[in-house]
Image (cartoon, rainbow, N blue to C red; front, side, top):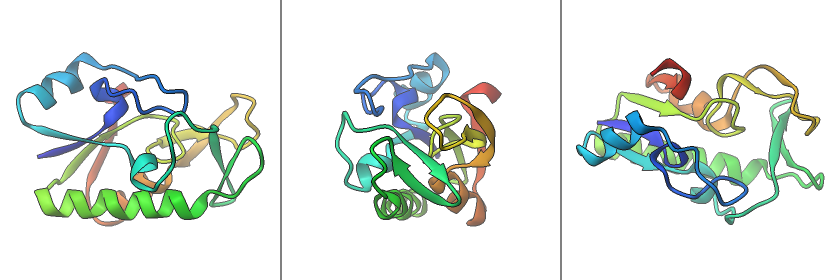
Length: 137
């Protein structure tokens, strides 16, 4: 079983209430091979929500509010789902403060991208899941 970012599966759970539909991910879900998750929703954040970015291992929304705890809670809940379903792989949304793997926004909310890893992607990777992004499909 594969864990996938819910926004890639066409669910409207992005910060702006939209999705990032990916036909390959949607097909995996339709075939029953993938489970969609949104760590930010699992952490208790609403949709839509104020966009957030990582600064020095903490997550702040555009208003400057520290939302690290919600992101960590969502990461833990995502890991719990991965363990329940025996997931060994995850396809996650690139650049996301939760799911980004290899590239994330720099924390300035200006669209600048830097090398980095999202809160959920980091936890899943530490627990041995193979992480790829939609760009790797």
